[in-house]
Image 1 (cartoon, helix red, strand yellow):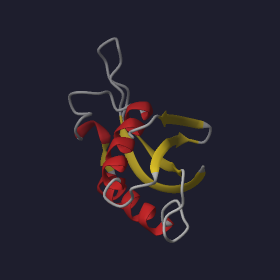
Image 2 (cartoon, rainbow, N blue to C red; image 1 turned 180 degrees about the horizontal axis):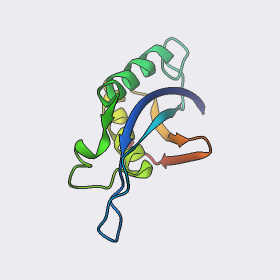
Image 3 (tube, helix red, strand yellow; image 1 turned 90 degrees about the vertical axis):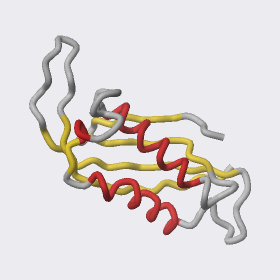
Length: 128
């Protein structure tokens, strides 16, 4: 098994909806997203997948989020609270959808969303 990791970042704000019915004050984070991809076999280039492709996929997902309020975006506007855990899952789903168009062998095994130093939400799972 081979694996790679790529990290990117973006600035966004959110305000969690509290179980009591209130909402916390809106605040911003400089989020860091790290994706871990794995493959049983290397591709024709002898990589899991070219790092540049992974960087491009992350940019495609994260660029529209730059300086946005996550509470105003689907599915966080109505369906999910914009927690780091749910946001990690959301990014992972988008990333895997794009990844399948670029690689037959690489798959996403983990996505880490760092909200603040020492505060990391981790999505692990398998889409294949």
